Amino acid sequence: MNFIKNYECTLCHRLYQPNATVMTCPVCGELGILEINYDYLAMKKVVNRDYFKNNQDYTMWRYTPLMSIEQRPEMALKVGWTPLYQTLNLQKAVGFDLIYVKDEGLNPTGSLKDRASAVGICKALESNASVIACSSTGNAASSLAGNAAKMGMKAVIFVPKRAPKGKLAQLGIYGAEVILVDGDYKDAFALSKEAIAQYGWYNRNAAINPHLIEGKKTVAYEIAEQMDFKPTDWVVVSVGDGCTIGGVYKGFKDLYELGLIDKIPKLLGVQAEGCAPFYEAWIKHRDILETEENTIADSIAVGIPRNPQKAIQAVRQSMGAWITVSDQEILFAMSLLGKTEGIFGEPAGVAGLAGLIKAKQTGLILTHESITVIVTGNGLKDTVNAMKAIKEPIFIKPDLNLLKPLLNELKKEKL
Image (cartoon, rainbow, N blue to C red; front, side, top):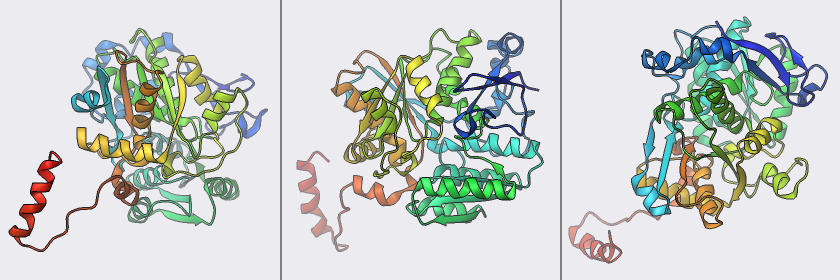
């Protein structure tokens, strides 16, 4: 059972009846990404505080009535209900009164993308598809492969040649058919689009498929519920194609419409300086243009965002802002988060924290404001770049007499 009212084009705002085969607006084409609208009055009769108090399913599937799937899958991976930490050491180090971190790297395949892929698998099964496919810079690929394996579905995945080896290893272990494209993400996306059309595979590409955002939005539900439905002033999200931040906004909007929260947090969208089409459009008051994909944060290196309207709307309607960070600032954030809170995030996963630090320096976010930072992916996915964020280990012979002087030096550095 679901409470879908209609589909709405994000460009022309035409309304369409729910249809499993329609993913974009028939009039506007591929750029006409659809928004799934719900009947909140009907939903309120089911989804309320008592519903959550009595629900013992601590996965993303506890939110099934708020999603576009027909029913909760019985055999799916346990995606969601990741920990939300108050970061006592980090907030002191950075200089804020209150910072929470939502560690999405503890999802089954190590990233927030599991939420989208799990829904994609559900919709593919509802459509009686036998193969599901997508293009990805890495995390969507590994999440699709893992979730497809669990549900007994074949996955075909297109990744650009720069994809980190850790993510490629995941794809192979999960048994996906991996197409390593000699090009960037734009090239991988274009080839996946042609292949999906040619072979009739189910399309998991989040920027095209409107159901994928319905999985991503569950991270906002969890943040709110884990805070007793009193979310922080700001929520910070790293941004590539725009689907995640769009999903975060929609999750909070759903809860606001249901009367479960009193406010929608401001959203800070963080992009890498080497690939920042949203920030450039925002700061220059122009349409989004294609940019280079020049950053270590591969998961957000999307030069042509395929889902721009939802991301732009998320920041605008939440009264939020955009910011960019350098690769060096990302590496610093990786090290800082690990040292202060014991959380290992990949470059794209900690870009949000790097953005928060910069937002404080520029006065964009004030010390007394409360913040939630979503760490979108696990650092084990990209150990090559993680090694750039740390100092070299001490290498010595197995001799205590050689170790003593080194430890004395470390004491001077406040070991």
